[in-house]
Length: 176
Image (cartoon, rainbow, N blue to C red; front, side):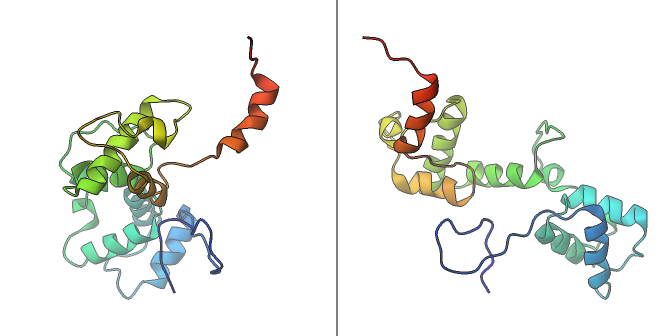
């Protein structure tokens, strides 16, 4: 079994995508782990776990481990426990915030430039080709490995130029 954050892009391996758990599913998951859960599994407890983990199974597992040493009330949601003063919108996924935060704080040159690429792409509503962005910062060129890091984390998607041409044929006008 291989566990991955995202589905393989092109693979012959059978894969299954686990979505975020809804509150009833979180209850069932907690009950299946009842030997590890130190607190009574009430509706309030399940609701608090759901709020603190967003139904992400890995976060629920981490929370269960934390419950071995602290009470649920003492566990902060991930975006609060990072120590950063971040204004988080209600609709923003905690896992997305964590992924971007990990990129931002990375000391790896590869991930630092991947984060630079993400910042640049965030400013461009329709994206841009990697070739056009390659030398946007002459001291730190951007290569395909940097884009691949973002792609593997599901932070960007790629489109071939040929996939964009049919859209242009119906909405674009070219004048000479």
